[in-house]
Length: 111
Length: 117
Picture (spheres, each protein chain N blue to C red):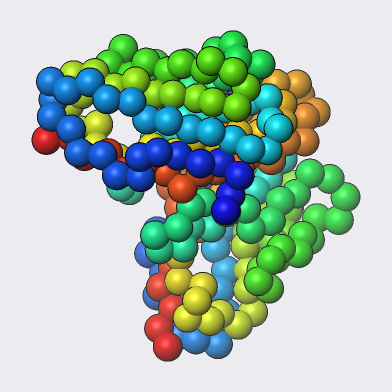
């Protein structure tokens, strides 16, 4: 079964700083890749997803992620964060009919 | 509004109680899921129902008992739980749960916070 690794569980940064969250997975077959976000007190929401095509995926709220197949990675980026980006971010990988989540990154943006 | 509604949002129960969590999806999906979200642990998949049939049960203790009476409703019956079962329980749905090329996105409910005392 595949596994998903997210490092740096807690990230604290100032507004306007750039954000990059790493996501690595272990499955060698065809994968679908997702980033979910959970704002404080809210439900998990889909931020962006990759199924095929252009490996650079644009999501909502200025987020993007790049699928690098050779590195088994799907890192999330945002060039300039806002206070409202404070949330927990989960990477998820679907392979072989199974969806696995990473442990999440708790991101705090300081005004 | 997520299209997936869970009730109750908060539940406190004793270890000898019997309670149920309810999930309803309004998205026309045919697969539903229960996940457990504990602090500092990955989301854990508990059960998967596809076309009202349980297709996955990830070694969940028998004190958790799912029920899927139709494709829009999913229950999680709770009985004699332990304090370590305290967590956020998330329901989700998607169009299609199986098939190697299924491009289904999972949509989550807001979750039910469970505290076992």
